Image (cartoon, rainbow, N blue to C red; front, side):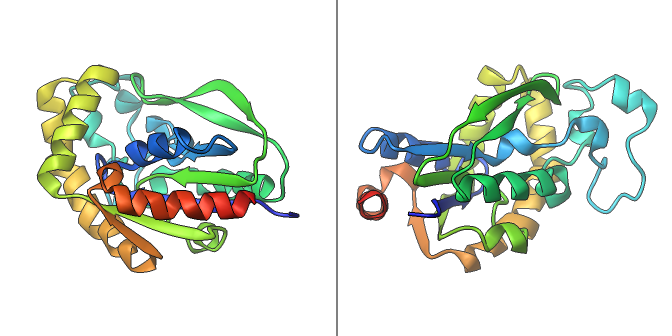
Length: 221
């Protein structure tokens, strides 16, 4: 095999993408995961709201907290370093190693640390907007969209952000209403059209997960 196969798993925040990856990892081991979240730009590089033409003010750059995090639009395609992501996916697809960036979700900035990722025959690429950029989309061999009801996704996101990212209830709700929900319907939901396979209820859909596992096993030979 002269190229790896990339399986893209997309869907809204809290849809169950990680659950699917965990289900796969319990059955198949010879793959590597590339989370789109690792390629977020630091908040100081992200526009305050969709459509803004000005970068964040110096005050916002130096005072990123629960109180003002909803001023920054992480739910827009421009929030990701798509150029770096594209180049690194190309390298992995060509069976070459990369240094993958790490992201600090508590301080909303890219870490100086990177991790070495060795190529595998199968690459699981997961994230909310992985089908948004045409050149990245073209690298993906199997495109999967995880379709989960809004209320379930919001509850999962709320729980994650409070427990893992040191967020407050008010900040999560404020950000969800201001940018997450609008961003989902403008940028994420429409990319369902590009999916080869739509999985309702994420990792809890055992039949769909088995189809995916079969594809991976066939790819690995």
